[in-house]
Length: 639
Image (tube, rainbow, N blue to C red; front, side, top):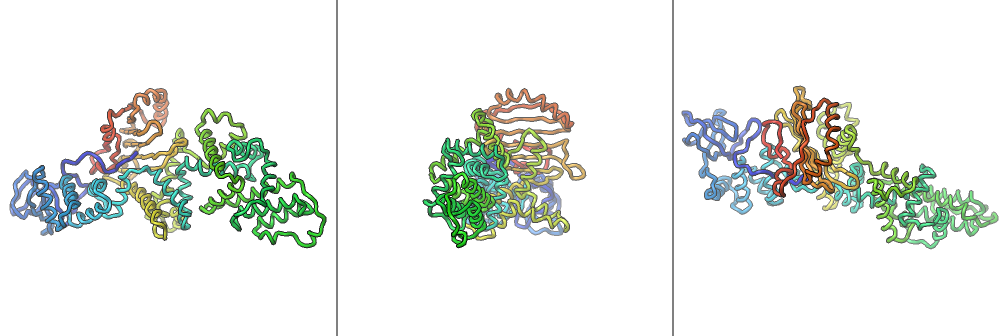
């Protein structure tokens, strides 16, 4: 949804620099001579800031010039007037050439383009910043990089590569949830090369990225686990087994005891199983049960002892019984007595592999599922059907009502445990979830570092188990280039949010982008907030502006603009389906007005805006969070 943080209307006048300017030697500025005084002194206006400067030559009042800052004399800035101050179409190329010559830079296309951009947008220039910007643009391209350079000047951000990279990644506009999902997939495909990578995957799981992909990847596994979990009730077990039949993983009409008996009978024919794995233990145990059907043991208790030795890590050969037991009379043991032992083996195997968080555990889970059903095509189809069942249950689709009660119980349990979603109708729940997600991203890392006391440092390791510090740690480890590149992109997106969330005079700005699951669909929730602070530095709830940006599955680009003035709220919804939204929302407006009244707010109205065409939509809906706003001049942020 947020395509660019730096695009906006072209600046046709000098920018306004926030705060008190501290001009540096060699900086080139565009200014106006307001008044001329004796001794070559003059009042010069740079942007909206006036100062007394010494001019190297007499200049005319009311005219605009390009100045180069020189060393101050007795605390007064010395400005040297440059030639060709006009920037009309005929004079721009000449001005650019002279600027490049003044800076001592090689005249090349990239330098010319950068100089034109800086001059046209009236941005301050020094040799150092010009050379840095030129180097960055050569590496990343001028098309997206130039607006980022402009943002750095306007916001007076540190002119360093890290800041440029962060804002550049943000400006490219790739959905944050897709970036996180792609990064998680790369970590999985790369085999979790380090312990840090494993922790990163756990953090990404807690953000619940790639929900639909999760349905596909672990839906079948969760149904198998619900069937085998020792904590599952009989109703849950029967419901899970029934769902596994619906997916085709277990043949329809086959009872649990017959399925287990088939596993026992087929154990001896299986081969190619990794040694010392959970699947290997299962395989060894089923082989013992197969032997028991042929009279290899005297009684069930002996088999139970041998199975426990296997599950405790003993080799199969050492699990064989002693000579005196072998001398006892043998008898064939009925299959119905062996089925519970086979089920116990399955339970133990799944408990072992699902407890492993690393990628190796995931591989073992897939290996175990493959052991239960050797038909790889059928397993793939069953995964799709399991995901479909969960999707229907999550979205309460009509087809879901045909599920049996015990099946619904399993589906609800899996969704509640693995695919929790935010209840958007519960304000406190949403607020707590958003706060939790900002912690998980690591947005509060630097704040914690600054504000933690010595007593609190014991709790600090929790802050290091979040996304940003783990990314920083991963980048210092030996990892594949592809993973490193993706980790840098994710880190830059997080850093950009921190950079653009800043104080501007009495105004506090905030930009927050979070991955959001709406049913089975994924999107980004981008919240742009601006409001003044009270005298004690807290947020003033009486005066602020909040903008929500969402990319919805059917409604597409949606912006909700909420303005609060003296606790009177005006809401504007910007969407291409404005008329339909207005009709659908009508029944909820009285409820909204009533609930806001309970919070001591008054709703002045809700309007729905339908952008007329693509060009207007791009101009009106595209957010411009603090990058084009310049210095503080009120509460509003332009859309």
